[in-house]
Length: 177
Image (cartoon, rainbow, N blue to C red; front, side):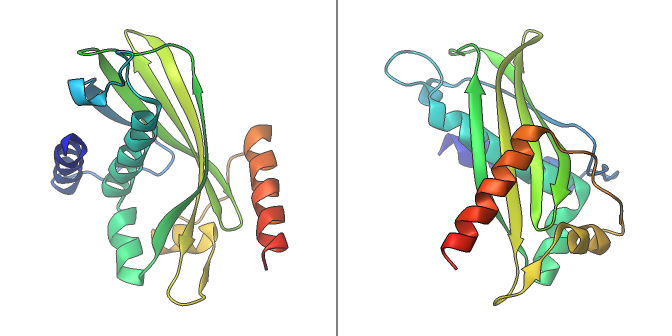
């Protein structure tokens, strides 16, 4: 239930903002570890980090206008891959920021980096790759998404871990076709 309140806070804040942000900007949400976020060992549970990255994507989509543009076209974002790396643990009532940034795209894949920061140090990072699912069998590319936003542009160069993960995703899709 506590993520529902956080989601509502993020979406309402993004909805009522006057100025839309650019898709390559860093989008930040601030939160703290609640008692319900902890596992029996007394630190934020691994699954909660992934839940926060979902909130980071919702914040990104609300502030950039992608949520409205994609819904109007019947496009649904689907997370295809996420790799979390933990450096430090967080405990109740520790405050932190989640910084979400789109780092590039390749074909149908859009790549995001999430960084959890507390007291100036990186707590965890996430590499996330998503794609858009269209109506029926419509293939939605990142270029189509950018065109819908009125922002056609070239992708910044992607780091090797993203390129490797995309290659793995394409190989998996081909083997299941």
